[in-house]
Image (cartoon, rainbow, N blue to C red; front, top):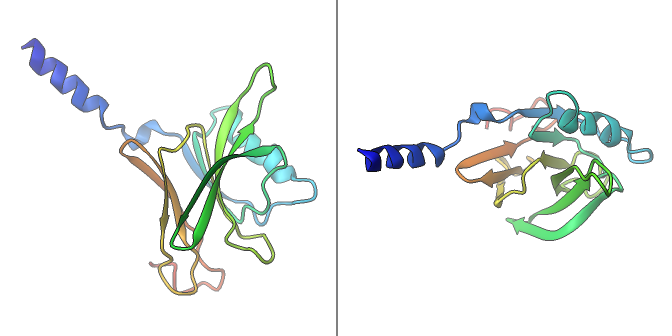
Length: 163
């Protein structure tokens, strides 16, 4: 009987409920690169304030904050680059680190980029191809059996919303 109980407990621990994650999404509307105020205040508060999000999907992420440092991890599937950054929201003596998975899909205006902010470092970074030839790619991260995706439809009310 003890063996059956142990197997049952270990099986349940292998799969996390998505309800156990505090997840959100936000359109930053292009950020404010000169002052990075939307990252420094709004995003910071969403992931470290009262009832913080563990995973935040950001559309129109603009430019990352200057204090985010690249980890050297670079994923490029299907031509879509994603870089991993570490962002310390705390101090050197009391660090509070999050990971940013950033895809600079708008190389021109650098406005409608995609990002995922996560409290945990992703085991896998995922890129799914855009649903139409003119759409943006879908980016995601995976930890264990749980995957989280970020998508941003075109502004024209368009053809990729239903995809």
